[in-house]
Length: 291
Ligand SMILES: CN(C)C(=N)NCCC[C@H](N)C(=O)O
Picture 1 (tube, protein in one colour):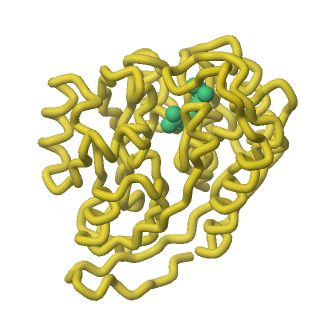
Picture 2 (spheres, rainbow, N blue to C red; picture 1 turned 90 degrees about the vertical axis):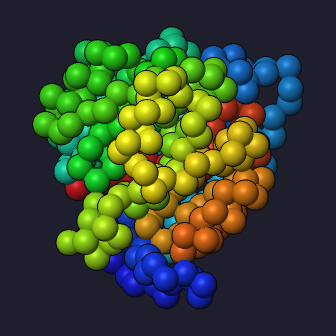
């Protein structure tokens, strides 16, 4: 189901909001008790109630836009479970399970796979280390796959075999941007004119986060991409969620907000500052369930 929304007044481009189905996890057990990325500092206090309030603002926004949101029960002792984007990668009712790089998150893999099975998805058990939609992004019919910090190159082959799709491997080089969804935002997840969308699925990205080879691939494949500044990247501006028209972003990504408006998108600011203490943002808290 899709609903059409009027384009931004100054833009010639008509954008269409598509109804999405997401999986989220209320951060009832959120805290920072270990360090597995440069953002996490266990000595800094966290406020779980504030994390829940901020997360609820995101949840409410999705419902307000007419999206369907499913919830997985949080498990005590797994504080990173709120970042559901890492729990798997789902296309056409098949969930490729996650196999986490660090032992601290290991038990989340089976917990998410149980949820997928219980909710009618076909589960492809992973052999290779991969962190789900944190490192795999569907753009049109192509999977962009990140490596360098978490998911392995072998998982790129495996995800291609599971879904029978072209996989484009990209290498991340800055430890602050350790998952692909910190460095690329998919703006038009549904490809093409046949879906009533723009002619080509487009992205925004942070060039600085990639090696030379990956930057050339991105430049060639996405000549119309929005290139985001280092300042906006550094506040996790790209860790955003788009339905093709409404793009939920961090309020600190002011340059990106202007770039989105120029292109006819509707940026919506939601602050997840507390969840940033764990090294995650809007997109990390959102796993798309494509049936
Ligand atoms: C875009 N990002 C970063 C995500 N998709 N996930 C956030 C994971 C955070 C967790 N503490 C970790 O380091 O795994």
